[in-house]
Image (cartoon, rainbow, N blue to C red; front, side, top):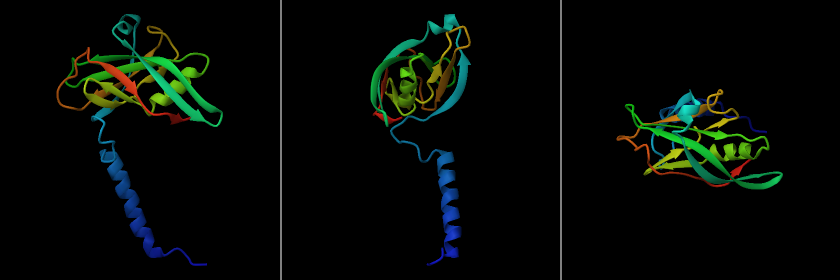
Length: 162
């Protein structure tokens, strides 16, 4: 049985390091997506919740138990008031588990905001009501210019594995 050549260890280690650097620098991002960074979570009061828009979407999740489809609504808000535009959003979780699958779909979906295509991964699943501990996930857009607060919003994506 041939042994593993020792001279391959150094090139393999270098390849792993280069791959890590490329991932950290963002060189491996989907080129169709606008540059954006996860900005954290914010608390949403009952009054602030009124400024969020309903964005309905259809999702599909495939798994060992079968294929599941459904409709849900994400709540999103565009805030262009800062140096960079921020989009915040949440998905209300239900008790039946359908929204858990919708949340799984959102983890790989895209948000079309105006002319920008963004990851929808920032949309936070929430089981609390606005003003009662609800937090929304936020995404800071690193593209030049500002997105209008009333820009059209749409969620799209392919079926995902459960």
